[in-house]
Amino acid sequence: MAASLRLLGAASGLRYWSRRLRPAAGSFAAADVAEKADRIITMLPTSINAIEAYSGANGILKKVKKGSLLIDSSTIDPAVSKELAKEVEKMGAVFMDAPVSGGVGAARSGNLTFMVGGVEDEFAAAQELLGCMGSNVVYCGAVGTGQAAKICNNMLLAISMIGTAEAMNLGIRLGLDPKLLAKILNMSSGRCWSSDTYNPVPGVMDGVPSANNYQGGFGTTLMAKDLGLAQDSATSTKSPILLGSLAHQIYRMMCAKGYSKKDFSSVFQFLREEETF
Image 1 (tube, rainbow, N blue to C red):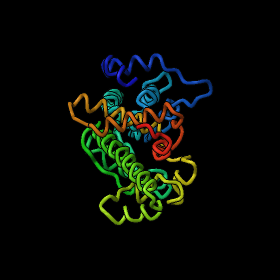
Image 2: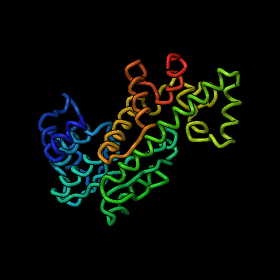
Image 3: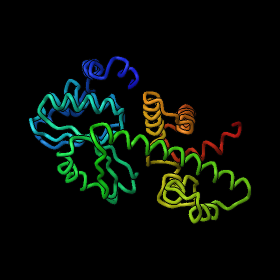
Image 4: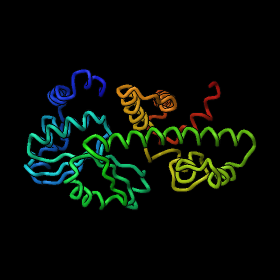
């Protein structure tokens, strides 16, 4: 859908989808929040969801107050963030994109990382709010740069998770104990967040999705979506992302084979079951 929006032209795309998206019966009206609050944080799964929340029939922009600070912590197309910022500016309010990273553990402990894009003079106000949830609130530049940073981060995360899963699977099939292999990796040059904090192999770590049948955490569908954003951005900037493209295909295959609702670290299980590659 994001690709369709770009083909329509981002600005006209916002109008196109806002006319066609309607809230479900009994759904929450973002406009009601905008009428009562002057600092709003949104965090939604896709570009289309963000467009609906801001520009839809009952969206924030219907009743937003002048001078309001609107922070979107969704991970969406940077072009959509830029167009939403323009629409918000027309209403006399301020829009900043501030996608987030760190996972469920960091969210629980208040140690998330926020990557913020927008007018620099407004950063301090955003930092005050986001600092309640994150230990790292980083100013990246103009609107859209927060999204750019998040897209790059998640592409690297997907690649490193696949690499960790492949290395662990290979080691196990070569006769290594998975806990021992993880210990060696984590004291060696192969160490990464996917190996030492979020290991994808069941039984290696407690308190991670792999210890709970890959329930909770960051869904495979969302990772596939983020990799699609990276692919689109790479195409528009003519940037080669060979491993990023392969990661995108792997997560798309996982979604098609029943992994869509599992955590993205379930790529280990996927590789264990797929022996025909």
